[in-house]
Structures are given as structure tokens and as C-alpha cells.
Length: 59
Image (cartoon, rainbow, N blue to C red):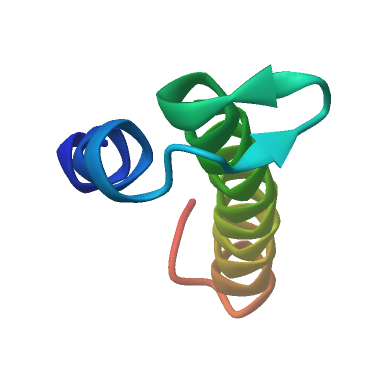
């Protein structure tokens, strides 16, 4: 988050994404990446729990 604020606010001043500029645009990109990683980690966690229950590790 801090790296995105630094990049968007100081170096990419003309960067535009989804109608927003600078650190606001970089923040939206970070939110999209964070959502994607959250979904992937959640799915992997569910698969891990279900897989362990099927092998008798959890009761």
C-alpha cells in the first residue's frame, strides 16, 4: 500500500485509470489485485480444509 502511494503520488503523476489520476488510480489497481489474491487464497484454503477432512485429518 505504501509503495503504491509513493509510486502514484510522486512518479506517475500523469497516470490515469478508470477516470482517476495519480495515487487514487494506483489505489484502485491495488484493490483489484487484493480482491483477486483474496479470492484465490480463500479458494485454496477451502480446498485445503475439504481435502484434509476427506483424509481423516480433521474429525
